[in-house]
Amino acid sequence: MVLESLFSAASAERKPWKLFFLGFVYATIAMMLSLWIFKSHASLVMVFLTVLATVPLMYSTIILEEEKDMQGGSETYLLKQHGKALSFFVFLFLGATLAFTFGYVVLPADITLQLFAVQTQTIADVNTQVTGSVVHSAAFFSRIFFNNLKVLIFCLIFSFLYGSGAIFILTWNASVIGTAIGNFIRSNITADSGIFHYFEISSLGLLRYFIHGIPEILAYFVGGLAAGIISIGVIRHDFISKRFNAVIVDASDLIVLAIAILFVAALIEVFITPVLF
Image 1 (cartoon, rainbow, N blue to C red):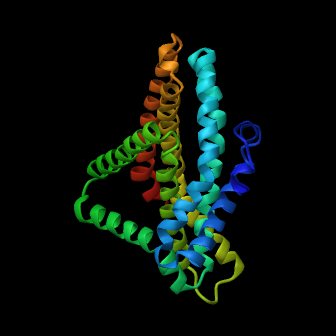
Image 2: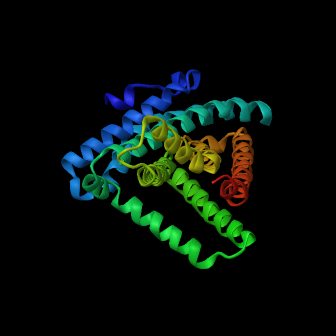
Image 3: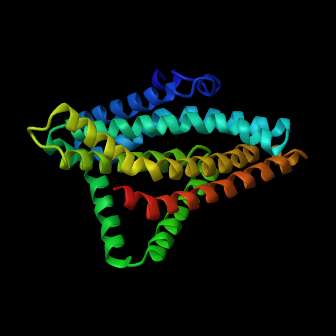
């Protein structure tokens, strides 16, 4: 009850930047508890515990956003209102990602291998699929875009069935990205590296994955919010009211927006990130 009561949806929308620290705290506590209690399954348990702390905030936010839809307003106005929730979700995700990255970098190698075992295997599988089958940029773009679209569909399904279920997929992605960034930093830092080199490598690691990673995660949050709004409307029987059509229209706009953001993110990942790094 302590962790989930730190922020309400309304207070999070007023000061979204504070959610960065909340995400960092949630993920850090989850890593500590998973190593302490469930060490052999820590890589999955830490994701579950982070989600457990985040679900109440996610659920209350979806309820708040659905109420905004029921009150009416233009699509531009509603998208602007939803933007407040999306901004603090992104900060929450960034905080969790940085916590996982920090844990990967500073913990002893043997603990890191156990704590991020499943995430490391996932990254290895993805790299094998990409290097083994992608030759041209167009094929690479198609593979990246449709893979991200599949994740978006999972977010839609999870959010509709479980209300705030998309937060599980998003937290899992945060742990995978954190592992990738942490591995990049750890692989490029030597024992005699100075503080400037630490800062340089850490910055490069963050930029390498955040340039396209942030738009991707934003798209998943947009899709998850859309499906969650519909889910709450069905649960509360708002689908009987005439205003529910406006909810469907708003959710549809959000889903289209999510697909558009994913398209841009895939373009960045295929054509911009490789040039920079």
